[in-house]
Image (spheres, rainbow, N blue to C red):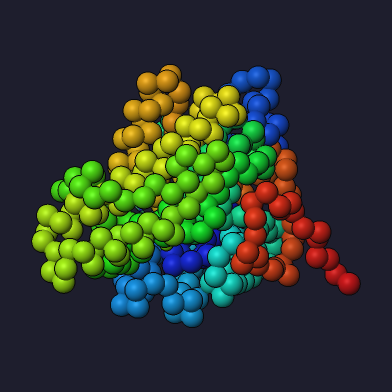
Length: 366
Ligand code: ATP
Ligand code: MG
Ligand code: FE
């Protein structure tokens, strides 16, 4: 079974095809007959990032994002099918990101997905964007096994979850204000590093000392698994002001390294706390900040010391992409917790908690 996935929730248009060997043979989390589950395989994926287009504005302009998705989705679909050696007729299910994200951007992906499915007489499946991120490590060379603790660190979310199987997500803690990616982006902006600043800040941090400036570690010792990053950017702004109008390259690199050290220390500490609390020995990291080298290095070391495991998505699949959407759809179909339906009256959910029920009643003829 070939599942086409379309992602358009923000500023990346992503399209992918995954192939599922044997649908609905495995229960959520356990292999049929006790054997290892064969998860869906990525056949091809293509991505267009709008970063260059939004850079001049210092952030994503929703209207421009929607218009660009319209231009990109079909060419990317053709590209992906050609790369996979498939034709449109080989698509069995069309999946799309139903939310959360920018409403207009989501509507483009959902609209194209449903139009394509209608034209091909195939069923559709709307997917939760965060479930895509969460499951993306299953496409890596070293996929995890259930159950595990998930650290989801993206541009809009910072959450710790207990994951017992596909669709079995219990929120353990989350940010009460900014997301970790936002903390990277806002600090990077203060340092004049452009948008999105996460990768640029982490590059600059390589040349600096993480202990050069004492920045706050919000909620580090709180007894819960929540995060708070809003105060960090204020502290960065205050420190920058102290450095005067023309900080040296060394000062800027030191401040970048100190910012990264503060964010990473909190993420690592809370992830270890979540593992201790749940008694689980496996951590799965996903979302754009999961690409951060310092975070990976510290999590690798901390888990290795304790005899625990940590899994990541491939670097190219940490930020938004179509592969994770096709994958999440295919894994929901494989485990039988979702059904693709000939449902073309799409809707989108710009705000949508992951632990809310995902299926919706079929929209049939009146
Ligand atoms: P959400 O998924 O919550 O809706 P999003 O889709 O915008 O948000 P992602 O695409 O998962 O988020 O990740 C983008 C974020 O990841 C940005 O904030 C970006 O700065 C950050 N990021 C990407 N690479 C790195 C890196 N190497 N180090 C730190 N941050 C990074
Ligand atoms: Mg993005
Ligand atoms: Fe995302």
